[in-house]
Image 1: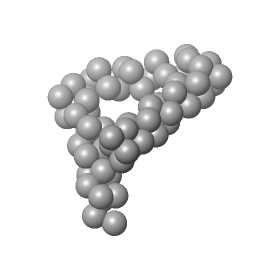
Image 2 (image 1 turned 60 degrees about the vertical axis):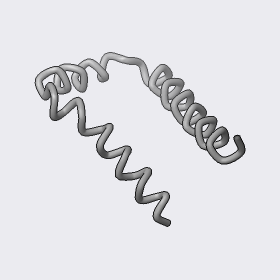
Image 3 (image 1 turned 180 degrees about the horizontal axis):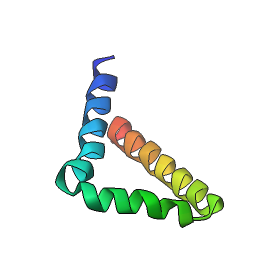
Length: 62
């Protein structure tokens, strides 16, 4: 359970960096996401999840 909380904490820190360092650019980026087709966003999400699983696999077994 502590590993999950550590990972969630690290994720929240990483997610917060753009909003803290340049909120104006973060808002512009958020608006530009609307222009990206849904299929492309799904592919980006799938690739991100696959990379996350690969990182976890490498950490656990190597």
